[in-house]
Image 1 (cartoon, rainbow, N blue to C red):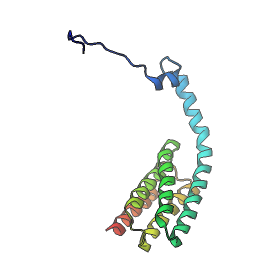
Image 2 (image 1 turned 45 degrees about the horizontal axis):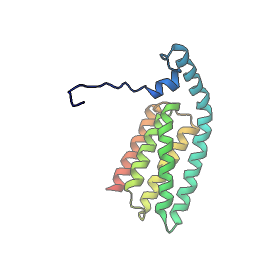
Image 3 (image 1 turned 90 degrees about the vertical axis):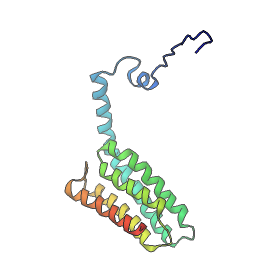
Image 4 (image 1 turned 45 degrees about the vertical axis):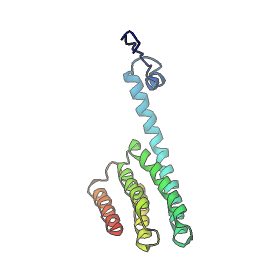
Length: 159
């Protein structure tokens, strides 16, 4: 506000809209193209999931015998965090839910408790099951039982 009490309104351009639409309104054709790109990327995302899950399996195995378990579990957290952020976009919200549970658990778990590593492994193996069984969406009744079971196990171990 100026000393005279006048107000100047500054309209900031919507940077994301400019990048997506080239400056104009988002059209039906743009949405169709975006959906097509997501469909094409979904197939490669399954491969990404497999690689990242295998990475978490190896990290978990190493963490069980490592003197510094926290660094390896922190890496599991990071991988899971990345996957949960991407999974719903590619029709794997069950991976997002399991990944969220795993992230919360690893942040609070006592890594000297062998049960903590069992819960971490259960989460990772459940993600692997989702991918190998092709459980899209929320996984239906089976997917919901898996996710709920993991969440209950995590709560029990955390106390």
